[in-house]
Length: 185
Figure (cartoon, rainbow, N blue to C red):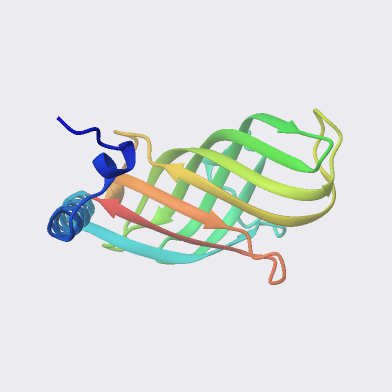
């Protein structure tokens, strides 16, 4: 029996290399097809929504559901009405990173023209020019975004049985909060 070098054992013939490439391409195609299928199945029957939010500096948002909220946002677009924000916790680091968690109540006009409500939990993350730990950030906001999964069973009126999620991204220059999301009934 002849001695073989380790490098000879690691060498793959051109046929084996081609078979491995084909197997890799096939596996990659299967993974891609599966992810497309899963995403379509999750979004099946969902209504895509979008619009803008702005701080309610005018006091227009005065629904009873918003009593005790930390602030309100006026929504336009596919959701027209008010978003009431109840901050539950926040953390501000010396680097300017600000994170906030809380809950919200939306009092908005639904797809059938009836005013309804639904609740979300939210997670907000942002960066400011400065921040003192444990306090609200100082200086200008550099960026900010938040995720708002809808609380199961919280919908009323046109939003009875709604599920889904909203995402907001702060437009610093325009001073508003574009949102998008999917609602499923």
